Structure formats: C-alpha cells, structure tokens
Image (cartoon, rainbow, N blue to C red; front, side):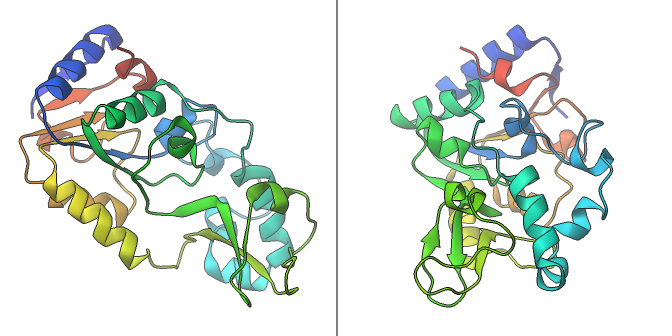
Length: 245
C-alpha cells in the first residue's frame, strides 16, 4: 500500500502532481462524487439504506419489484432517484477541464445522475445507465427525466402509449455489454487510474478496476475500501477538495 493522505490541501497537491506527469488518465467513480453535489448515496449513515421506507431501497430498485409493483417503483424513482436541482461539484468540473486539456481520456461512473456530462465531460461510460433516458418498451422512444417527473403512476409513452422504463440498471439486471467493453478498453489503456467516491464493493462494476495495468492507482474515498492496499496513493478526504487545483 502506498502513502495515505488525510489533509485535503496535501491531497490536492499530490493528485495534481500525479496527473501532470501522466499522459492518459481515467477516472472511475461512484456515489461519493455525487454526494459532493448534494445527492444522497446508499451506504453512508445518511444514505438511502438507513432511511425508513415501506420496502428496503434495494428491493424497490430491483427488476422483480419493478415488474410487480410498478406504481410504488415510480413513486420511489421520481422522489429519490431523480435530482434535477443538483449541480456538478469541483470533481466533476476538474475532470471535464482535464478532458479538454487532453489529460483525461474517459470517465467510468456508477452514477446515474448525468452530472459528469453537465460539467462538460464527453466520454462517459455510465455503467448503471442514466435517469435522463427513459425508454418506451414498445417503440423505443426516449423520454427525459423532466418528462417523467410530470407524469403520475406508470408513465406511458407520448408517442405510442407503451410503458416507459428508466434506462437504469436495476438489481437483478445485467450491465450493458457495450458499456462494459468501452469501460474496460479505457481502463486498460490508462497510465493513471483515479478511483473516487466508491466503496468498491458493488460488483460487477468494482471488478473493472482489475483491468488496469498502468503506472499508478489513486483511491480517493472518505472511508477505507477493500482495495486500498493496491493503491499507490490513498486520499482519505472530501473528493471535491482533492480536485480543487
């Protein structure tokens, strides 16, 4: 295991130095990047898993629950999964800036909020989909998150009347092969992999980091992860502050 830094200013300087001497940086991120933008995560003390609902959140976000309790699913989806007021944090903004400078070649994210794209990142592999795409199961027409929020009950396609399903990967569903392949190619080609805001316990997404064969791995997460021992640098601080340079 490499060096661990807890001071945010020191972490920022160390990360900046590594990025500057790298040619191909890939960022692999999770919910902690979005919590910096005010979106609740799942596993932290204030996360969704610690709140009281009629059903456990992991149940309501499963494919079987979607199929058998569609109205309850959409009540939860509208109120808890879509956060259109959220804005990109400093980490989102810095990653987009580094992409424009030719440093960052891709962002691989487990988040479904679209904040990386809002910040300006162009190559984003969304492992778990996006709330901004809601697809008619009958004709394939894509509806926005804004549109879904204006509907009630089970949303029906404005084109053909078919059922609309969010383009997010629910529990019990597999990841999109095209997205996985793109993420793996990006990670395998990088010389610096920055892992941020993720506990690295959600598979198969967390398993993608094993394809990295480059020079340096940085893990930036407030809590320890199972893969800290493999990192060259561990930044145990707020991720927005780590990217503040």
